[in-house]
Image 1 (tube, helix red, strand yellow):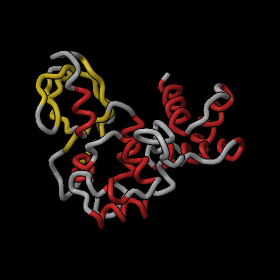
Image 2: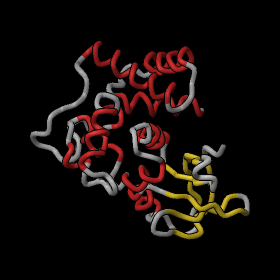
Image 3: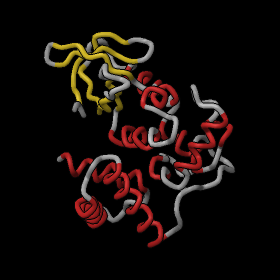
Length: 214
């Protein structure tokens, strides 16, 4: 199972790229917001991608879906847990940054979700029902896209925030990245002890992943 790749961009296409890795060219499907970022790289520059490898009985031909961070990949794996949203539908629907989609889910913004490619009103309702309360860690800025009167969706202050944030990160490590619960809890506890200034789930998740990869 492929989980990570580094290589040179040989070609960009409408839905992804051709990545040269060890003399072999791999077609990788990318969400639109990732593809737009990739296009900013100089031609044939070496890049790295976290890969979701999709191959099932119904889809025997392997499909590689790429992300620039494990945070994006973890959100994608939550997204496809929603009934009627498979990997290929999800990657097409993710035509905006993860933080924007997560913000809409936490604020029950059915109208915004319904504008995502291939997601109508009914599917938007399913997404909110399945993921509301589970994706606040993916919101880069607590007030979401734009500013002004947007309602804050971050958890409460002080100790309550720390406990909820830690629980969210442990849940993603266990459910989406396959860590055993005791190990995930230990990873989170170590990072909290080392970096006491962390205040959001996204910061905590990124710090845990960086520490695990060091």
